[in-house]
Length: 249
Length: 186
Image (cartoon, rainbow over all chains, first blue to last red; front, side, top):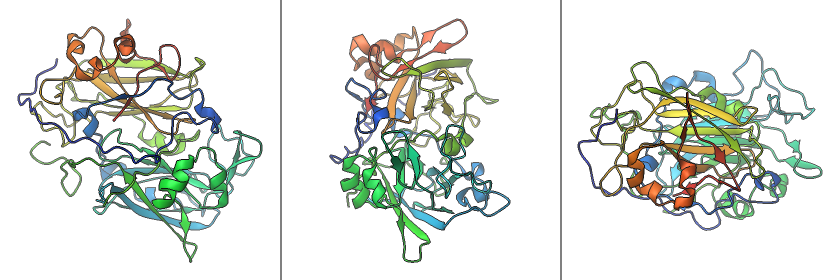
């Protein structure tokens, strides 16, 4: 059933750069209570960089519908809430654009309620807002979503715990598991600093320095974000349309 | 220019809203070579409790040992119907299930071949960075020469190898504690 590749290339693949110290959270972070039993106790084992670590799914535009980037136009009526544009670029550590990357987002409605059976918050749902979007970055790594400003909502981590307004991002970088696969974009309101799973390092480190922060502009309509994925010394080959090169398709 | 990587965050409890659209539990489309294999298991936490709000994603080569990605410049056949990507959430019992094929061997660094394996990433509420691991296949002689599997202490290696049951391969994930699954970083 298996066959051996005929060209057993002995080339060594470029590895990933180490994270800058203090920019990534620990698995075990007791102030965020749910991490305590869901974090490995054994040390992680360092993987060599093989073909399995530098490849990943390639998504085409055929899976993305025209309104997927605009969360205010996915239903018959207008959703309640303040319209915002969330836009930015996906860059690697050398500030090079990551084109044709799939970015998925999800968020609460203006009242801080998710349309999810496990959300018990007594805020109202909005029949015209389901809070999910997706897009592919363009040739310059840019992405753009139109949505409404999400509301804060309570959670059960500690007494009177409220999660600041945020939008969840899932990002496919150039490879399957090239972290970070998930990031949150925050409102920048003070509540973000009280949030135990905003790791202290990410507050004073990359959150501030790299604008992973939903900044409302003077016109209260735009939010700028910049998202970074880890880079390797060499980048995968891609055609401008993000498809497999002809010679191997 | 050198930029820091964006800080990772948890997907939280409501990820279904944003991630369900891409759920793919069957990788074996028409025209894909190889015998379909059911791969199933459960995720449990440090108390042995099922994790009912996790996402499991897999990425693998096709049965010929070729990734559908331009970085794989090998000459094993590509298949138009093969993507090699799967995503599913755990159910109310912490279980997940994929239908796929056993991948062929892909190149190892410095020459040679890796044993057939499936790359796995797992994320959930209560996890601030995704976990990365691998699934190897039972009773495959290539496991003995796989550079990644052999880099794992022998006492923990079995956590990366699926078990062959009558109708499926089973591979369970223990996040913490006795029999803790091996997780990787790179």
